[in-house]
Image (cartoon, rainbow, N blue to C red):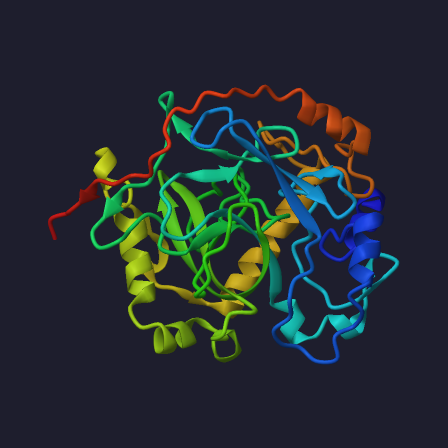
Length: 340
């Protein structure tokens, strides 16, 4: 427990060093509300897009390689002192403000994801049976119908059964569907408000899907919970449920199932799920549970036994092979029509 205390004091894994110093330059916010995220993270492409070698690595404001899974903080805070978020910053508005790592821009098909099993967890394209994965276009949907990504510093423990779903986690960071109006780029780190959550049961595993909105979206000021989504974006939740139910059907698989009869749970429920998955992540990073094949290499988590130096992180990236070969440069153009 003693080793875990420094991690807890940082406030949901808040980073230290150059990144923390850069964040202090933002100064305190006098009131909650839309704020422009400081560009504290950069990305660096290795290999060719649409190839199995493609990797998107992350760097902090100082230019050092980091893990988007472990080193980007979960919570967004308005101010901090010595790496510790102040009580003033921890008001109700900022308790519901999180960093989201965008893996898949809206309307695209390539199934991109944080590589949880690789050092520093770059974004890569998923591969199945030796082939790059693309989600199908199922009429009337084109690719992903939201900006899709994950919350850093969360982990759905495959050994821990959820009381509500009666299934264990899927061994990944918790997924996010961002429903705002802007299309974000792969690798962007944006600030989102959590609105609700859907419990997908994927091959017997709990695969939570958070519903969120970019805090700077024009409609963010009036959308605060799942019922507001129903009011201001009618049909979007129904389309989301339909998408997740059918997206594997063109591959010859059955429809996906859901816990709670496909009901979207509200913000309060979603925040409890986030809290639980963050606690699982803490245990993972402090070697308190079976991590299996998850790579926990990080640069900024105090007292984590998996922490490496900035120089070691750079060496890990330099070891990644790259190729100039593109396997495909085409998004999925075929449309599938399913019988109702």
